[in-house]
Length: 388
Image (cartoon, rainbow, N blue to C red; front, side, top):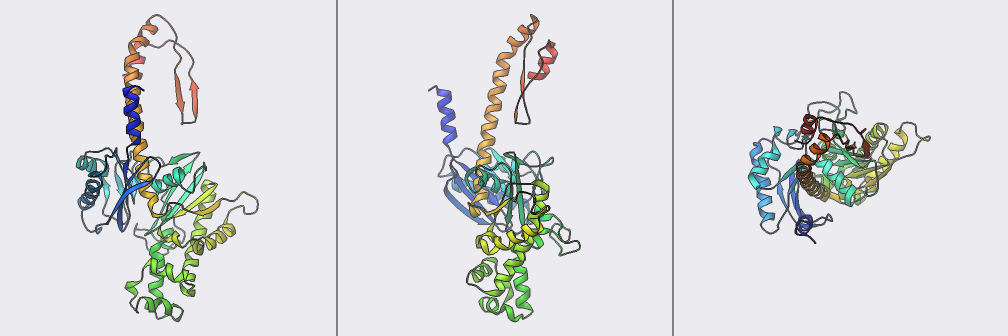
């Protein structure tokens, strides 16, 4: 094997770091090419009242901790917010103090490694497609139920980010006009009816109002609504508490409504439901499937997408971010290799053109195939613009 190929092979085997930044935590891990987490660490997300610099400090801290023990290739960051089309800046994060934040360049300068930034739900979906519940599926919609709702779309096997990079923000679809106020500024957003925050909000409201149906919840939190958490309600539901089950059924209903809307827009073959709220499994997904079937446009006359739980759990975001960083690093290396090859071949192309020899050039079209341009003479200036 040549030295160049050996070096490329060794690079491909090196791990990458994936970082998942949510509304309440920063989870990071060293991930190998097969999607296995070698080592992990976690930090609490700094308060959104603090400056973005504090979040960058947290990211730099976890990279330094993990990088001290592993020879990593690159770093991928899954951020809970709108990430621009260049995968470099966080345009808006409802749960963090990021507004047009150039996160990629800021972190890259701090840690000295290549950095890729993407939406956290995109990263989670990518992980499920590569290593989890969506392997082999070409059209997939992922919905992550956590502090809010994130989403991602794969169409024809390609992660769809949209024209400006902010596709998949399903949590901010308005499902109840004039409904609950959302942190994004609008009212009636989907995540105000089918997220972890909703589960806690509704449980606290029942206890605060002294509802007799919530006596088990009140006992568990010792009468203090502020002590109620999502995992607490999930555990009570698993134990069969009627009030907790009813709360999950309500969230499942609204989840099914949103999935039916997404099916009308994207017609996927599979919905993958992830995030912390999905840990309850069928206690949430069964009512979601029921409402989905009842609400689906053209029900009874069209194929129906499956609704499944994510396979990678809360690790999906960091695994996907790490794999996206690996792929981006590989893409950049290929682009550099093509540029070098082009520059080496350019004198020969000019010579052929000068002699009147037609050259056929192939180009990739939308990543789906190759189109052949008609042969013809091109001027030296045309070739120069194309290859220099």
